[in-house]
Length: 328
Ligand code: UD1
Image (cartoon, rainbow, N blue to C red; front, side):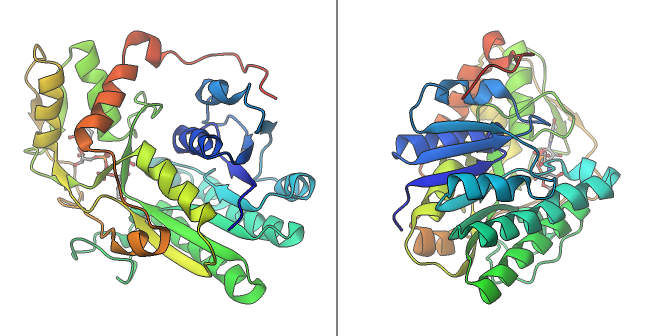
């Protein structure tokens, strides 16, 4: 569709900020919205001088906040990435999970309806599949989330499907697999393995492997994820679609470690610890549907994606600004 302006929620987050970069590169105007609950102003600092970029500091989990923004800016599409990103936190705080990962999606759908915004692109997750044994898992598989986080992502997909069926909203829910890349916070114990390993290697400390390292994941670069989201906002005429965003080529932790070792030849040997309880051994997505609906093909080779991560993991790249710069 003719995409002139996109509103991005969670724009200062890990995936949000790369999506803003990608949209601006494509010549699309961006209304970037974030409350800095977990997002970081430095992630979008580079966009501030771009003429097609506007920043709005706002908490969209509050009623009518997003609706007002949509009425003011009249975007062609909303890319909804704001949410509670930690699976563990969602389990520990079900109220917050409900507010940020379910109720806010309803507010997004209603804001789109009230403002005549044509399309919503939603950040869903492979967590909706639970521990599905089908590998690679396709969108046709029955979803069986095993966490409150996965449940909330599935409910959100259904809220949006409801608006698609009854109000004609165009919807694309993208189920992300293991996303990695620059700007992912490595500090928290809930961080993805790739960001934790990158930090440990950069510091010359041994990585901790839970289990024997033979577990596999479908690691996808955040640069590819930003492309997939931008494509989902731009492709002509969709109704209600659900697409995996993955490579289809799972990699083991041992492979990841040897890739890091080639970048850090002096690194100490990894420590092997007990496997985490209740964890799935293998995860992989089927990328065929995203290829046909979004014309999306993961294009960043693992090695290149990891090099980008290593480059920013120098001490300077880890600094987070305590101050919120003036953006708009
Ligand atoms: C991700 C989620 C998890 C969720 C699951 C299913 C994150 C960070 N994790 O887990 O909460 O339940 O999807 O949807 O989003 N590992 C190590 N050493 C480390 C860190 C991790 O060996 O320091 C291992 C883990 O045990 C795991 C693998 O690396 O086997 C990947 O871990 P992680 O990045 O947390 O992703 P998922 O396990 O896929």
